[in-house]
Image (cartoon, rainbow, N blue to C red; front, side, top):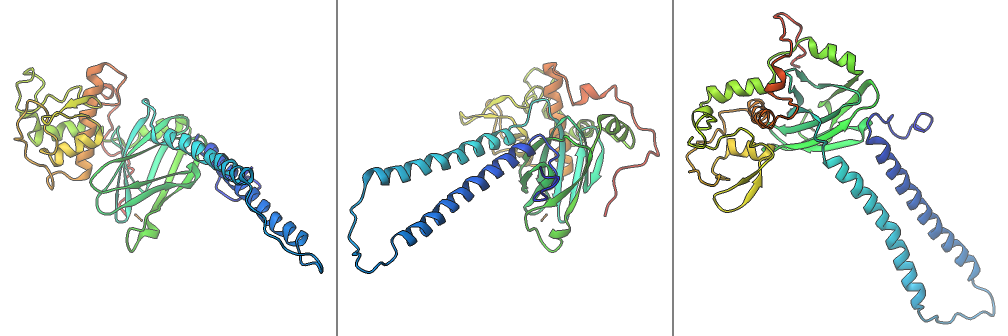
Length: 339
Ligand code: CUA
């Protein structure tokens, strides 16, 4: 349809068709309502125009009329809400098998970190037919990750993670925009989503790979001294909780609450360790605010997630699954161009 009706960009994700359908439905219902109202105005204006000898007289209310013109539009409008909510929840719920990609926004660029170690600036390469989950944060102010061809937009906030997921359907190069005013160069804060056939993507992945993100995190975990307290070898005797298998599981806190150890929990525990003390432990961990940057935080989060995946025996994106991947010979072209 959009081929000959250039009202919006070609749809290129599984979600795009649904968003377009809802959009068309909104336009049709709104157009129909507008037409009915103007028609009624015109018809009544003509029918009850001033005619010599005809007297106006007061009409008292009609309950049936009042109720029907309130209740019927109410249910029609409610379909907007229900349909919108269905799409909203689908967009907000990444599938469990999604490949994770970390995004760090800063004035004025997008930094992309693939779990396999590739880094990109203002470009994101993805294969068709695969669920991709973006885990996004900002180094400075609020930005917004917007891909019109995918019909997707999500604010990217400093100090926490927001997520977005999609499945691209058509190879091509699609615009990425920042959709939140973020300073002088906001309008230039764009890039490209490069969607490739899976075999082309595999080739791209094989060239220029660097250390997988969980491996980078593992090295940091050791060099920052995390591993001296968070130990897996002493059966709960470490000064901090054993982190194997923690990710995405409920954690009982000292104050009686139970929280899910998601990405934001792990992040907060690194930057503000006393915010949520795990039951049975003392608030002895120092903050790593100002010591680790967002890229390092992502690596640590990816590492802790990989621990959960390898301990539960699931197919892993983490260290367990990456050991057999080919390592890159030195001198391969890197995908990073700092602009
Ligand atoms: Cu970043 Cu606007």
